[in-house]
Length: 316
Image 1 (tube, helix red, strand yellow):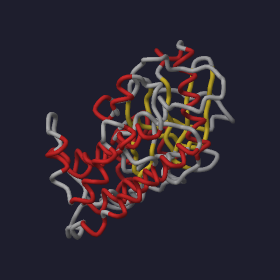
Image 2: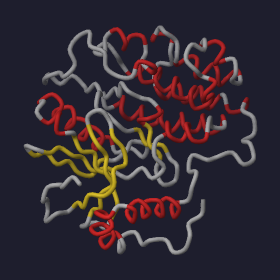
Image 3: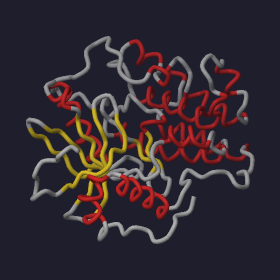
């Protein structure tokens, strides 16, 4: 079990692992001062020796904290010590959009449009602040307790040029190739907000089609499965020439809004982004705690006053 530093008299108590990435592990943590369950992203020890990795981690946390947008995952704390770097964020109770699509398949098209508009609002705020995300994709979109999307993982952002050091060399490739705009694949320094629109277009197409958007499926065929105006909105963002894409996030949001009259009614019984109730999700957390002897002895007593264990057998 990882031991967080003694900070403010041991403010954070480490709980179960929520996920692992290339550079960090995410834990559920109990904020003893505020009485809240949150998530802590902790940099792996192997990267702590890299000044560039530490600087990227700190920039990520500060960028997310400064944006203060309802569809950007909020950061509440940043701890930087010689042997530890962590940021404390809201807990995404419903996990990532990628996990949701893997579990339940594509979204109803009305949900795809709503998701896109919410994320475009977040991207507009970021772009207005001079921030280009450079890694928009389903696994970097987290779902809160209501199923609302939160853009996360700003680890490879491009920040405004204020004359300080740059962490990305000319000609470098950053991001996830399947979601990268052509200009970003060529040179990650030569991007603007339209690269994020391209990545969001790929994300929305994946959300709309699911497995039907497999490797090698021509874009024309994929777009042909959508209503015409929705295909126009998403296809426009995916134009290989950025000059032919919507000029900004608000313009793309307007195209999505114009597509609403074409959309079929939401199917009865369609699975929502908030698939389960918060009580069910809290019961899941308690099951993890009870199943681990170390957590059961340390976390359960501290967790009970903050998040009472649901009584009875939880719904499935």
